[in-house]
Image (tube, helix red, strand yellow):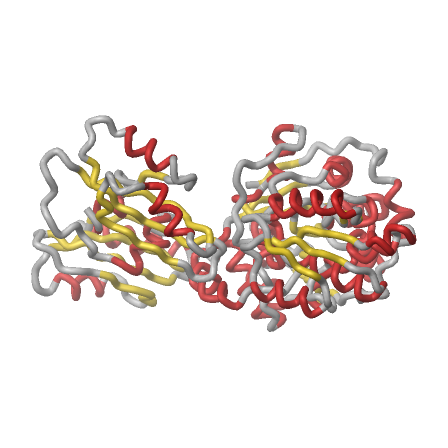
Length: 516
């Protein structure tokens, strides 16, 4: 999704940042990072694409800039008392490094979902760590409470003028290197980087477009633009933990409305594809938030050619356990893998005839389990190079009278069916009982499953339970429940007591074909 921003036409809020950025103290701990041409991505996207390599900072993220600038501007009394911060990882490293350099004590409150690599990195800088809350916003509330009780200065990761100015030095470096880019793409969490960079670039180079990029499941800026005011998301996705923020910063939003041209939202699969792209050009493994800007750039580049586009490669603190998930979903994010559910008669030779239909297509998977039915459902994964070749395949299947469904974008197919095809209910239910299927997510934390089962109780029988996690912040769950109640809302009410959000999928095509 792309949302144009109606800029106010003045710089009332952002003009003060020019002096703050110009005088920002960042280079005691940060480097002026290089801008790399990305030949592989450029060839694929038919534009000249560049990466601002903030993944090469000493903490492998741009966050050391704003953190150091904020802390170095504290007065002597504040420095002596110490600081407290909340972070999902990268801001924590920036704060810890700054405090180590300035010999200031610091406490970092981190969500319990923070990747281990980031927790260990913060500890190496000598900071004290407290794990609290499921997300960044819960950690912030607790950190501010501690700061108020103990007299510690709270170092905000994005909604602070000195933090914004520190991040804004990236925009200054870009224009000092070269100022003839057509557009610059910036990842958005709370908006500190976007506000700082856009404040400098928009007032020093009028022709360069500034475009923010968000993940669909944590798009607090897009929602704020639509509402023309800051809004708080009820829930945020945690896969791109570096940008998992419920609400855009106030100072940040004021600047963004004056200086930013557009915001683009992308899917998790598109982020995974961008991680792969950056690796192929730089051999750096970006964290999801680090590749977010490039994912948005790729959406934008579909509508233009021969433009000079730059994305901020903002961080490389990837959790190793997430790599398998990133690899699997990158093919879908690039729109190169398609998943088809195809009906074939349950008789000898059917699979051979079907296989011939695919010709030179590379088969990524072929899932089937025999049933008592006269019709078999085959789940086939194929890799395609163009949409045209895929459309031609579907026309061949229709010509040969095959019945099929495209499950490429089906959540149950991507998260579960590909690994459990053929798991039908193996007993006859009572005539007054039906199986209902629900999809949800469990956070990756101790006792999550036990807490759910205890809250759900034992009145209903669980007929199917499938849990799968490949490194995401949440494990995917598919659950089947035998419901003999006349009132279907009773089960929904019981599930509500578990404090886990469920989506009923009993009518889902994937469930009907393979599990019922």
